[in-house]
Amino acid sequence: MKIRVRNLNKSYHLHPVLALQEAEFGAYELEGLIGPNGAGKSTLMGLLTQRIPPTSGNIWFDIDGHEHNLRTMRVHEVARLGLVKTNQRIQGFESLSIRDSLRLAATAHSQETLRGVLDKNQIDDDIESEIDHYLSLFSFSNPNGYALSGGEKKLLDILRCLVLKPRMLLMDEPTAGLPDDITQQVMRLVVEKARAQQMRVLIVEHDLELIWSFCDYVHFLSDGEMLFQGTPENVKKNRVVAEKYMGV
Ligand SMILES: Nc1ncnc2c1ncn2[C@@H]1O[C@H](COP(=O)(O)OP(=O)(O)OP(=O)(O)O)[C@@H](O)[C@H]1O
Ligand SMILES: [Mg+2]
Image (cartoon, rainbow, N blue to C red; front, side):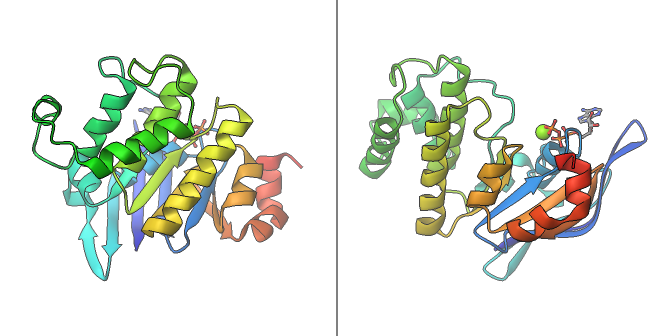
């Protein structure tokens, strides 16, 4: 399973913010996407999931030897194929409890409305126990109430994506603002799910220690261009990465 992009470009007001001739994501279980502020990391993730329309170019999602051209798809169709993204900035969650948000995510691919599902008591036992498991792993102040803090919303956003059982999960600064112990717990859960469900993960993070310790492969983006790709060891040693990002 992998995402392939070819000649992918995004400009705002004629100003290019992303220009990728060729790139592949998903060859490894966990991949990192790093680069300075404004490099185009979030833009790339938005393009891959079709939240942001490209100026030009193509994106394919290869699943079991079948190529799906994502350019012709809407966001929900991309999600239904199993390509799902967490958000750098969190919105929503105001109108549903934490538990119901997870239930809604779990039923998102069905045609049912949440109310219909809840009224008919149709939520699968497996889904309920998975949700219970997540809620017991992380101590939300009140799982039956709303997500209150920024941290709770961030965590809920990640869990909501995991409940979807994606084929590929894109995480945009997933743990920014979370305490260290929760960050480690989230990452262990993501790794566990990746192994168990053959899920691939692409993580954008400024926390390089997290990237080095969890990722098998790293892409380095700067000024909208992919300047280097390799194992964490090779990326760490790379002069361009050091100069442009790590300030050494
Ligand atoms: N809607 C928009 N309109 C105009 N310019 C935009 C828009 N969205 C992003 N940009 C610009 O595109 C560039 C890339 O932004 P992007 O958010 O992808 O960077 P990033 O690598 O995710 O940065 P950060 O690490 O700070 O999150 C930036 O120069 C940004 O100002
Ligand atoms: Mg960003």
